Length: 551
Image (tube, rainbow, N blue to C red; front, side, top):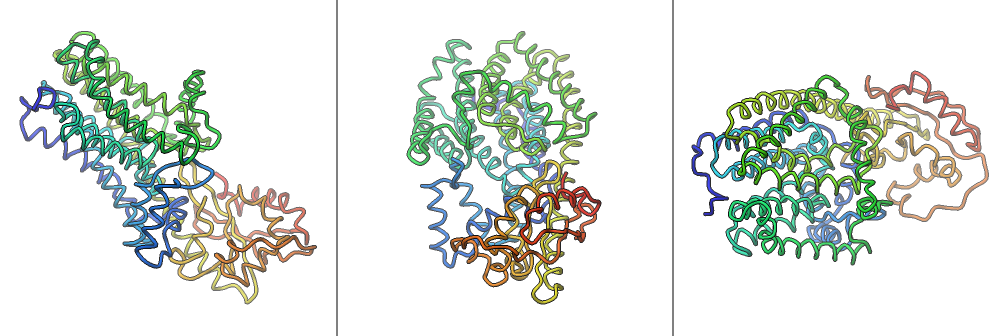
């Protein structure tokens, strides 16, 4: 075992605690969401695999994701994670507990893995166990990670980080190119790339760790060059991945429709994209005081790490490569990502945050007692602020899940109570602040296994952004067809030509009150040709009955 991989000087008890405690805290933080109802994109992922009549059909659906990606219009290639959703459907269908437990296990494993990487980075130096404990605990309590863990549909980020950290950990155990740990690390890297595009962040992370290993032997500058041969197989795996993306999507780097990542990087526009995180943060985490404490503590830890690096060569060898990996990860993020106005999207900070934490804890291994004690004080402040922000975020997800469960029950009760021949139209929230709610769940809410029976012949559910499409649907007898045909058949069949008014319109209208968890009747005076549909709903959405529909 190389000096880089050794753990000499660290007692087994602190080392084990540094791995176990972050995982335990991760589990405790997310226990409240384990029975949460499925939300938003969870439903579309459920129906990607629900209804497969045999294991071979299910396997065929999974196999298609390896050669087609997730689906147009995105260029997302995530077959490994899609396979886990297929397993959820095969084992428990719409049972939310099975979906949530996978995310919980991944987060606990990620916290322990980050601790393990930090422990190895210390090479047995004083304070290594403390640095590992803080890094793992900070990831367990990381506020932006809440979305990736509380929302099964964001499992892509959790799984990509799991394989990225596993790949990094294996790279640290390697003594020479293409030995057994190195090959296993490359396999984990490939799985990270197949989990989500964020898996590419394993490349700068592994590069930083290999640089650290060689810098111990050759010095910081020469170590960067000496690490290149060990990094070449990683670059080959990345090149194969991008070649596959070209074959499937025609573009190696674009993940989201309309994105121009290479242009963003070349022009420097990614810096402005990253700057948008400050406005986004206030919407995602409105607790201003805790956010200020967190930012100050992180800035202080970064300054202490920089001071330790300036004083000691060993700390410089740890800090400089990891700082470079953090900046590379943030640049890649800024080239692809625009921050949503309502505060969604914290999941994208999960992997960059893990890499940054490895740089932030360097001062715990400083020779200076003052630096170590100062790092401890600011780390406590960071962890307390993180725990408060993450706990409030988890509470928002729990509230959204309870509201979704109540909505499902209310839809079933309303459908059962409608007089024969009547049709109800329900409008609900697309999202509740930063928490996605009914977006992409409108159809799933009306069908088994989510609904107790098929509701689509009696009820339609829509979110506000989708309301403008309905006059055109009414002209094509959407209500009549839903009453006569199963929903799946109505969706698959070509739409009929438009009819002349008057159209078959809903008989009753409701808004879902997400706070009181009740359907509120709405009086909507819609013309027979639905020409005033948008104006009627604009007036209704401004009324008290619909106050909770738009955040």
